[in-house]
Image 1: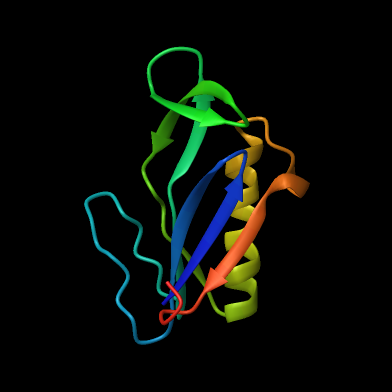
Image 2: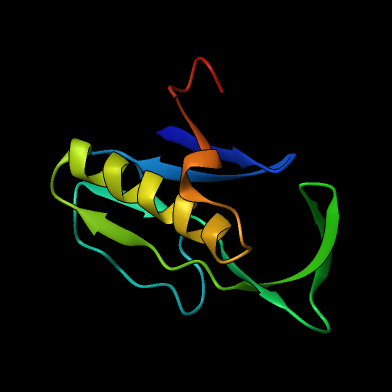
Length: 111
């Protein structure tokens, strides 16, 4: 299992990459990817009202969350690249430039 984290604007988000032999979480409405690598992470976007307050780059915005959707991959490198892209996309939805997002990939002993 890898923890893949994205940081920008004074906040961060972390997702989990389950590797072969590990059991990704099962929950109502979750897809059942039949792949050796499974990425699970929240998706979110900025809203005008409702949602949760979050401070990004010193500015308070409102963020709504979508249900996490597991994504399956055949290769570890592709799974990590997709996880990094997912994290950058989530921050972009909040107005943060891709080049401002710092990504960390942590092995279980580092998490």
